[in-house]
Length: 426
Image 1 (tube, rainbow, N blue to C red):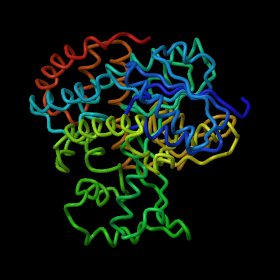
Image 2: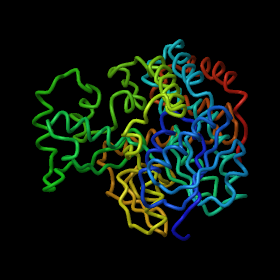
Image 3: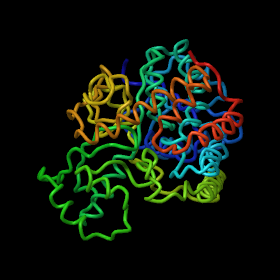
Image 4: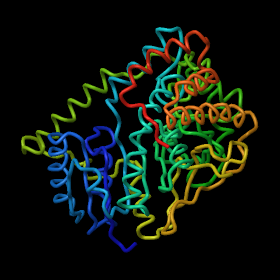
């Protein structure tokens, strides 16, 4: 592959992952001479991000060539890595995913990666991902697709089953889980190492150890957790006390997969905060590009996401350990279905991505997550076949859905809202 690469970033105007990706690319010394091609649907937003990227490149000395285009097919020509952070009308449609099930009596937490909301997120997102994959088959068939967009498990499952394109999903949830445990134990985050396996947003922390000695920290956690503030992550702690392991990256995320998940809170995503944050970030970017405001120092430091670590590990054959990635199972977790999408540690090097097996999940955890693997499989089939009939089956086996009448009613309503995006993919 050589020591430079063409990296195509689809969804470069994403406020959340866009800035993280730029920070990581610009703070890497291992990508000098490579090309970063930014792709976005809206020319104005793309122009702002591109100018910012060029300023960051100049100030950091990253030594990149920066390109930008709204033409995805042209951008992909000759790419080595394709990073996806795109979403379709994210907040507007996500609100429907959360509010309409609630209107029909479904109690749930986020409406994003689990429960009925995730089905409709899957139905509208997979056609876009398959468009990207088909374009990659034409323009860069050997490239690796690195996905940051939700619903991660369903995207990796679908592409693993129906596309020859190599792909991996990345999520920082494992670090969120680590931080919760560190907080309860009263330890600095960097003093706690975790190894986890499961599905995205519902990983089981198989090992929790002190970074400098390797000491098993579960006994300390068990002791500290008993007397800790009972209002802090109550659902996750109930799962811990039931199954003996910490599962997931916070109550709102793991709660999406559980019929009682709402007991940890059912306020949903804070859309007002998100939209305010996006406006503030866009204004800050405009001010920096116009030289009205200095660039924050941390914009030229790593964000903590692992996309660039994957890219440089493969590009330079670094044999790099990546704490967590979503990949096709293939037996890595023996007590989950072989074709499920699982989240496990991986090693990366010039030969690609190598999942690390931590063995079978604890029996109860495996059975809990096995239910979700089945829900995800039916949701993917509904999406790739544009089948309302299979979509209803996916709702009927989802443990979060507590009424057949509600399943039919919300399917009718949300199918119509998402109809412009639903189409056969295979």
